[in-house]
Image (cartoon, rainbow, N blue to C red; front, side, top):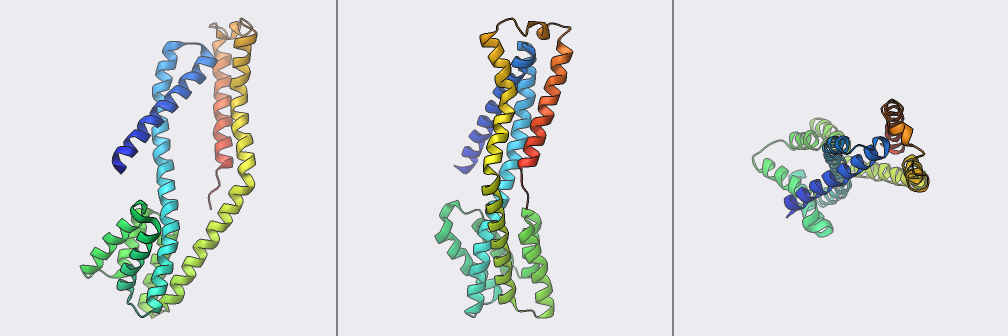
Amino acid sequence: MKGRSRYFELIKCFGIWGIQGAGIVLLFFRSLWLCVLVSLATAIYGVITEKKRAKRRWQNQISIEFREGLQGIAAALQAGYSMENALEESQKDLVLLYGEHSVLVPQMQRMSYELQLNQPIEEVFYRFGQLTQVEDVMRFAQVLHIAKRTGGDLIAITRMTADRISEKMEVKREILVMIAGKQMEAQIMKLMPLAIILYFWVFSPGFLDPLYRWEGRPVMAVLLLVYLAAAYWIDRISRIEI
């Protein structure tokens, strides 16, 4: 079901980006054949972009659940469990919290299987960090490796890592709340040039006709490039990475 849902999401993304690309080109060039070509290009770009966004959402969810998992591991360690058994106990907590929608439980099940094959736990976490490319996981794997070699306090290290992840998430949440209004303004600014062109189409037919002839096409091409560059930088500025 998840694979099928993901498939339909990509088709939906392909269609939305294709329609958006065709609409923009139609406004700037009033050319149907160019709309078809550009819509295919923008649809493909949209699918690639959506995959990147989906990966970032997946990594963010991994980070959220990893924080909960670390807290469960720390509690199990404090109760006297070994690190390997604490990992299995933490899975039970994640199943209760997130159920079948958990993205971390399948990964932890794979890690538990590797531990059953007598793989060192620090190497298991390191491979997990390499797989997810989540900074919090990779840092914990590095700290765990050092702690296992030097005899560090695993309970304190695990709790401290979970606290650091929580603090980072709280800061990110506060920043997103602060810039939410600006992000909405940015989206409106991106729509304004298109709305102005559409306004002239509807209320002043023929006013922009010189720009759609061959001598006016270079002007519209430059304006389109300027618009796309501005839209790109608006998205870059409003995207906060912590």
